[in-house]
Structures are given as structure tokens and as C-alpha cells.
Length: 360
Image (cartoon, rainbow, N blue to C red; front, side, top):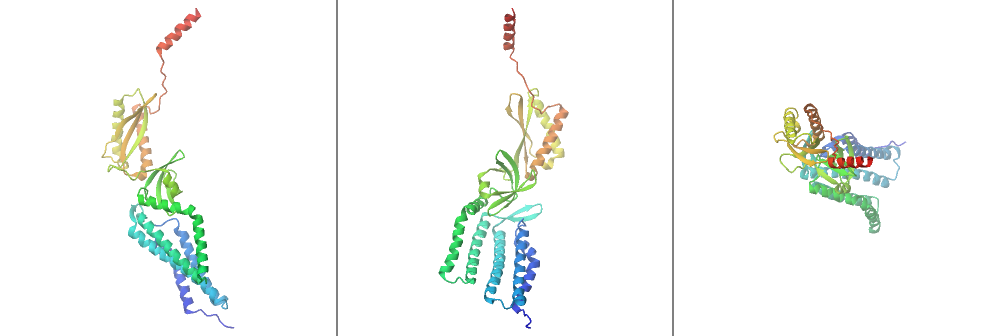
């Protein structure tokens, strides 16, 4: 009985893939400018390829040494080439993001986000590497004639043409979003759609979609890049003034309270804000109080203040409203819209006269 032997090349492949299996997570993390939700999936995929390569080598050397070496070598080489091309693409993407990306300082550290230049270079570089990988696989599979190779490439081209409506608009929209610099990772957006308003933190702008974090309910959202461009967006992080974002709170106060009393009331509120909530807004800029509307039942007063702590904007609004409510209760000022009735005295007297004449 002939003992199975493993060649030096096969030992080399086994050892390399064992090392890559254990260090796949570290390699991926080093080559990624920012950790994301796809990291675990791609690391698992790399490790699966390592296991497949090791399994194929051991199967050929130990279990079935008489297998057709030609086709076995082709299959094994395709897996190895695929792994190598993936690593080359990750290394290329890492250098493009590091060179042309934009650094953001967040609570967890400094991260590099994509820009129009980095995304465009990564996309075109990925397409170029994919074409080289595809041609290599075609040649390895034995499609040497131009007719055979052209047929395979033509099939791929037809598939891309038939599905371009699903992916091409989103890729172009993603590049437009990055090029406009209007929506960047870490920005706080105020999104209006279907009569709803959502405060969202931009988590990641990907090739086909954008991932958002709903600040109010603390959950992830995904929206296609084409849909994101069609929505009415307000980027609260892109304030136009050096003072910060000019935020406002609106209150209804009855006509029985004079404007002077209202302004004195908000002056006391501002004093308490500076004492207890100075870190929530730009306290060096005085709050502004103005009349927005004189309605049928109450006067609509609006309080304006500046803040640069955009990620805590909802908490700031809640704290300010609670403070103003407590102050209003202490000062005896009602924030409830009163129900008013206006009686026309002349009309009432005429109605009474007519009633008396009829009774006579």
C-alpha cells in the first residue's frame, strides 16, 4: 500500500491558510479604515475559503490521490486567486481611504470616512481587479478560444445590463452624495417623509445604500441612495453660523399675560439655564424671545437659542421644555391654550328686544 505524500507546495498552502484562518480578523481590521457591520461576515467568508483550500489539498493528497490533477488544480487555483484578489482589493481600498478619505473625531476615536475621490477610486479599482480576476478564471477553466471567452464575458455583460436598473442609480447617487459634502458620516439629519419627522445620525454611506441611526428610538435604518436624494433633508450638523445651530422652542401663552411679563419670565429662565444647563447650549449668546403669531386664543411665543452639541439636540429640547414648564407653574403662567368666547353685546341686546316684542 502506497502511503500518501504531501508535497512541499501543498504543505506551504496548508500552513499559509492556517495562519490566515487565525489572523483573518486582525488582517481585516487593519485593512479597514473603520469597523462596520459587515466585518464579521467577511471574516467568516475568508475563513471558509481557508478551510476549503486546506480541505481540497488534504483530499487530493490523502483521500483521493488518483483524482484528475488537471481539474483539481484548476479548482484549487481559482480559490487561491479569489482569496489573493480579495486581499489585494482590501489593501488597495485601505490606501485609497487613507490617502483621499476624511478623518472624523468621534467618541470612540478617529475614523476615516469615504469621500467622493476615495469612493470613486475604490469603485473603479474594484471593477478593474474584477475584470482581471474574471479573465484569469476564464483562462484557468480552459476557455482559451476567443469565441468561448467572448461568450462567457458576453453572458456577464448581459447580466450586468439587465440588472443595471437595480444597482447603477444607487451607485451614482452615492457618489453624488459624497461629492456634495452635504451628507457625511456622523452628521445629524432631520428627515421628513410621509408626514413623519425623524432625527437620524449618518452611520455609513455605502455603495448602494446609506445606514442611519434613529436617535429617537435608537435603532438602525437603511435607505437606498436614490431615495435619500429624493427626500427633504435638513443637515443640522452643517450650521451656517459660527454661533452654532439656531434652535427654537414654541409656546402658547394667553392674552391675559402681558408681553413684559413674558419677557421677564424668560429672563429668569435664561438665568437658570446658565446655572444648570450651560453645557447644553452656547450660553455666551443670549436667548432670543419673539412673537411668532397672534392667534384667536393665544399668542405664540418662540424662544431661540444656539447649540453645537447636535447629537444631544433632543435631550436639550426636553430639558429646556421641562425647565420652562416648572418655571411657568411657579410663576402662575399657563402654557395651555385657553378656550375663549367673544360675545357681541349689540347682537345680544337686539336678540333680547326681539324676544320681548314677540312675547307681547
